[in-house]
Length: 357
Image (cartoon, rainbow, N blue to C red; front, top):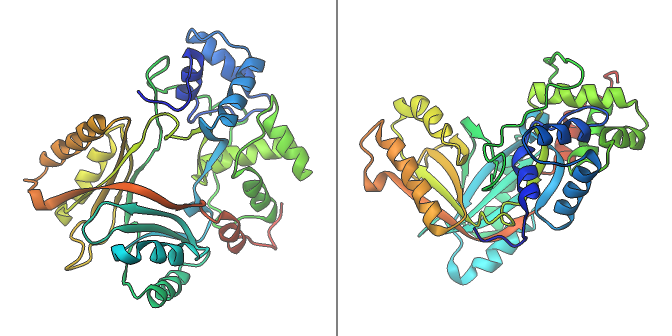
């Protein structure tokens, strides 16, 4: 495996163990270190804090903390494809990227649709406006592909080494919480989400530090974050790896023309493959885009990536006779923009200012 940073046995155990399921308790590194010791990784809470801090500083981690589910917070995001003429590619990319609503933008290998970007807006009605502006500015048609059904979002990147199954789950520690059906956020909840969206302080008491920064009670922070996990507003809490730094450099978006009546069966089957990080149903565009099913895979080498894509194809073939024209793989060749979802505006639009704390 090619890595930009050398990781020892303990580093690998930490990355594998805590891509989710990190404790939400006042001193979370103590039970986390204890769980590692129970699995043969001798480390104290203080040492674990230092490990996580170093991995973060070296770029092995994108951050440490919650992975916020922006869709559950408010607003919407959609995947958009377009053709950028090769002789104007950089010009078109610059125009698209100038729109603050564009969160990610990739160049992908495809004979026609070679630019793919994620549009994030506070109000769903804004999607049409922004796409109309992009079309007018570039002279190129856009193809909106909103998510119709989600089968998997589980972008975990495990390494060879200890705890390779990544099965440490300490999310049950701390107070028991009942989820609510609240559709909006209170101002205090909004402020908490915005405070932690880029990560928690890497200290022995991260939740207390967040509470002190907001001027609120630590118990409220702990209970609220646990509830957000239960409600799906936060997908998980833990270390968020930089998959490129871990050697996962091959990024393949496989797309499939699945018979409509089979999508409901095919989706869970493909989602069960542990190397598939994202799996969705999206709309076709007649005459341009025949595919309605997307599965994202990542590999640490071209050979590993190809083997994983072939495994997806084999699973698909269990359901219908997959022809050569029924699927394709679009590899990313360039990251054109990657600023992340504009959570602040989406959360603000979904905040009830009259709600209690």
